[in-house]
Amino acid sequence: MLTICLWILCLSSEAAKGPVLLNVDVPAGKWKGVRLRNLPKGAVVAVQVESSDAILVALMDSKSFQRFSKTSRPLFLGQVEKRLSFTVSIPKAGDHFLVFDNRTGAQSRAVTVTIRAARGSADQMEAANKIFKEFERQLHQIFVFDPMPIGIKQCGTPKTFIDAQGVVLCGEYIYHLYDTLEDREKTKEALTFSLFHEVGRVLLSKWDHPSANKGKKVDQFATVLLVMLNQKESLRNTAEFFVKNPSVSATLQRLFEDNRHPLSAERAQDILDWLKDMKLVRQWQKILVPHMQTPLLEKLKLHPTPWTDISLVEEELAKRSKTSL
Image (spheres, rainbow, N blue to C red):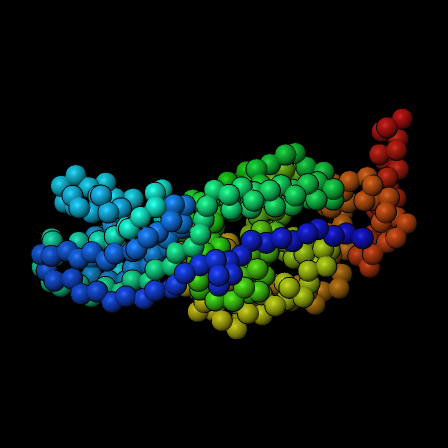
């Protein structure tokens, strides 16, 4: 009765190269460069750097590398204290270089770098946004809400979502999540909850509901939406995973500096508890029914689900019938 195509974008092992792990020792007063060969235009390079102490790191094309320390213009330049992660979309095909600059350091630096490169062409992003457009269309068939940005883009840094007024997923979130979980299905399930957390947050905000600013209530609302959309088992799987693997959750939260995505072990346990509450979805119908599309309400009246509150549905349809007269 209530369905939506959950075409969540995730990387396959064929879509990404790596991870490549390198150990580099950089003497005091020196710098070292690591060549990344033949990167295609539009490739997304995700880099994680760990250093024994402070060091500068830069990613640049071969032309900038040739004039390094003079007039080079790196695609990325950052200071590593202990750990730094960044993502860069390659604007032009060719060799590129990771440079570790310890020229101001009084002691050598032991650097460990993890590199993953994934195809990220404009065609792929266009196709991905078409999928999100279809997702938005199906969402509009269920609920009444004002238009909002829904899509995906490269954000240039490890972020999850970038538009507080909509649901715009950062491609980097997919790459780093897949890199950490190393499992296509786990990545899809984790992304599904993240997506519906954002959908729930924005819908509650558009409906002027006070729960929009309460993280735990948004988690609960996302749980309710996924149960209504027959995604209970997928949600249970991802919640159980993060409960059993709190270190994975902690690693991802440090990387993204985001306390909403992905799930923490504590929030995942809340979800498992809510999934046992048979009355929870029905309790949320007081909020949801007034914002459901009329054709859906009419179907629910004829073919109620276990969570359908018939009295609320009939009351809302009667109200709309009077308004249309």
